[in-house]
Length: 256
Image (cartoon, rainbow, N blue to C red; front, side, top):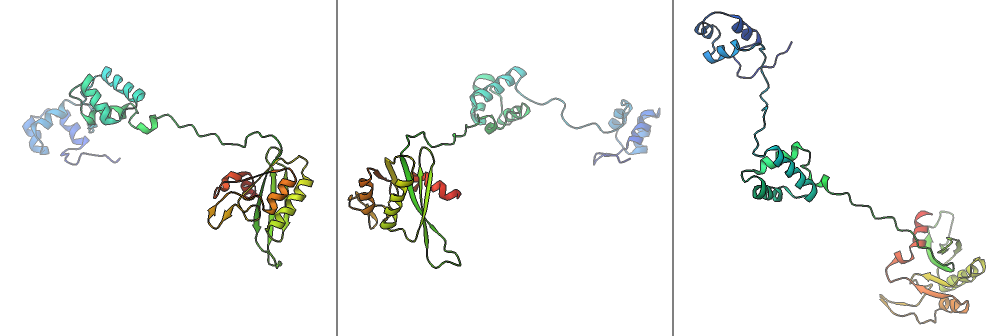
């Protein structure tokens, strides 16, 4: 059997047992085993001959149990950092308290990790589209990649009715104002709900609001605006460089 002895041990459990059982004088045992008189006397008083644990059986602390309970209570209720808790402890509980002593106390009671004691932050609820009155339609255009057997580009015009999620799509060879106007005419005929408002981005197929890199008010002379006016539809535009305003169609493009 493997026996773990202290690195400086001059005896083994067998020698210790022999010392305890011997009636010879201490001086004789000292010379025989090469140990001190204190060692001989120590093992003569023992009944077990293996090394005892060197772990302290009683922790050295300046705080009594009542003070430790108060310390833990302050930690869990006020969520004080270690240094602040030390200052409070020295001021009101024990002036001799040390930083390491307070830290050991917190570790013994399992409250040393301040982050674990903080209340969990509630996740923000996922925002959904509000309940809207039917009649508002979101419109956008997406360029479709050109396939190997195709010779021209194709553009997907998509319209989504905000309240019912009714969807209407059409393929166009370009995204000109003429194509957008034709799409609107077909959309108005196909939609089972009377369209009262239409939301689009600031693309040239929908508006003349953009001029170079600067924005301006729509003139109302754009073909798409004129078609909306003829159909009694209010045409609204998203914010410049804010595609999230038309997020319903953007989400459709992202999932289809």
